[in-house]
Length: 120
Length: 157
Image (tube, rainbow over all chains, first blue to last red; front, top):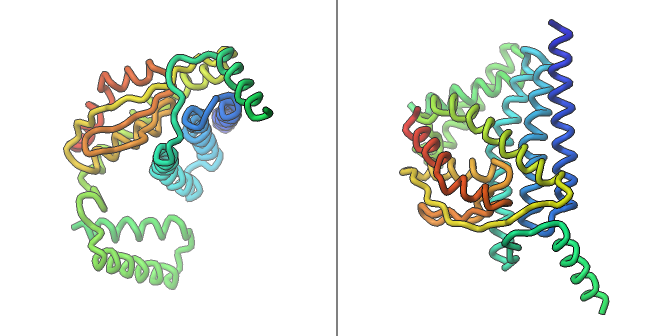
């Protein structure tokens, strides 16, 4: 029983860490602000959520678990508000979202064009 | 009624966070609970939106459902991020929120933002402006499955 708990807890913590890293990779790969925010939300929700559930299994039925529940609730309520505020502020400042079907090659040429433009 | 439930909630919160159950600390907790309820009463902060008690039982089934949605769309976004071709098609759409109360609309908008791949960037009455990472995500939202689920939640189910 103890063993199964440990395994489940570590599986949750490791997969949570995996999604944190995925969000980070997405943050670097995405072309502009809005798509980057989508990548970051993987870290926010799946990453943080799985880590907290993993830690709950570590703590067992105790006050620590209850505090983790509060932490998760706080997260669920504040994260979308912050995301919304950031996106809204960006729209307000006329940061135009990149729209339409995009693939990595077009993204690469787009990026190199921007770079050469800056140099000249 | 709302004051009683806020008071119980705050006192429970105090007990859970403190973890020390001596007469002195419990008295202090009760006093600060009373103080907070008095302040909330003075600020007139307790109404349908400030403390939506009628939504409590709905959350018991709504949050597990939302977590499953988050897991599914999180996995979709993960596959897009790790795909070497990075097949994204960012889309902006208008979605109609069918909820009747402000708390319902806020829940819907927040749920959209919370699921990876879609986020609410603007709210104007019942019209939400949503940015989606891929067109399929925007179309899923247009179908209105989540809208119906939140409407059910709003009614307290």
